[in-house]
Image 1: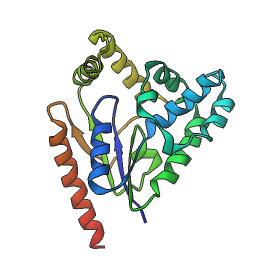
Image 2: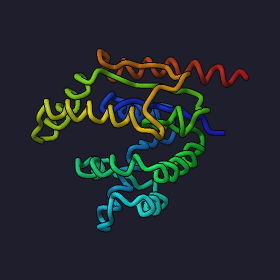
Image 3: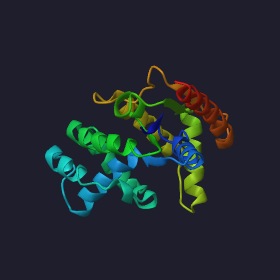
Length: 214
């Protein structure tokens, strides 16, 4: 049986970096579930298909190959904007959640990060982490990331985008962003990635130890 670690949280809280580090440390498979929505959106854009027809988007979502997700390509802003439009469609979410659940069964274990892993995708995950940080800190991180890649960035615009995305993610009717009742909260506002990783590792090690004793 696969060991599942579910990591949720808002944009730019550090959950992606943390998830990849955890997966590498434990030798588990990793899936950034947000990329599955972006891959669906990119496929629609590439084919010149509409973003507002749910049946079309669902058909495309069911063909997304989870092992071929290119983070660099899928991180483009226009793909993110398109993804946010299809992510509110219930049938698209249902199709991608089915694929994500299938991925979670890979042995010896999996780390899935997203918005609704602990609440919807893998409610029985061995460990659930909710990684967050203040909107100001998250906007600054995104700003620094863009500048480091040689891009031009506007902090005020990024801050507004972070707040708008939070409102959209937390306010949607289907699978809103919220911590699972049994999730461990990790606020990374004042934490380095190494400190956040060590905190997460302590929680995971304790859960693995308890599970081994059953």
